[in-house]
Length: 304
Image (cartoon, rainbow, N blue to C red; front, side):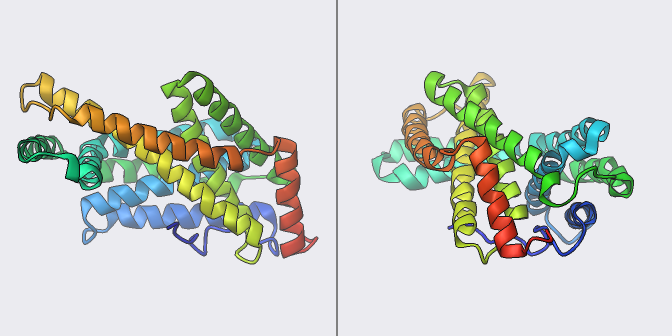
């Protein structure tokens, strides 16, 4: 079941679009900084939450890329670097969580011997997961400090929906191309690109949409489902790499059935992803932008 959008992560057309973009950006950044610096919040919870916030922040930049001009690239690069620091620190934890999901789904197919092999691999991945998450939190917090000053210098040439239309269409078109390439070639690179653009398009839908517009709200929920499926596909690759690394280091022999089960889960998630994708990326970019503009105007009023 998809989770609801955080109330602050929606644009309010009753305010000028430039100030709204800044508000959303600063509120999301502020929440992330609080989580990074909160000593009472566990490292794994904080890292997981802040990674998601950094993706939302980058989606805001991509939505308004045309308005940001030369500021876009260095700003996006800084947020990307912060996300990478946290991703590297969290990969071993992702591998363990994914192994647990695989065992839960396919446990009935495992013999007692295979279950023990899964347990040994889990222990090996647990050793690898003992990374300095606290240090990563401190480094990312320091890296993000300048971002609080960015919105003060934003000067959007266009007003209202016109400031968002190019970015909305650009990201959607990129996702559409990546989905087509991934479907035609099975390219891991294309699948990874599609996953990132689906995440951006989902966040753009959250920003522009309204709970009062049933069509956009339904689309938002289905985009979240697609994002989750593609994210789980990425997690399978993380687990496969972690298990291979443990085997090369002679820490543990990966379960003999793991590769087969990962292939089964990959096929299941791929089928689910492309079924959803064909429905969500059916419209041309121009038609998609027109539909969003119509929903924005109808629900929020022509002043938007």
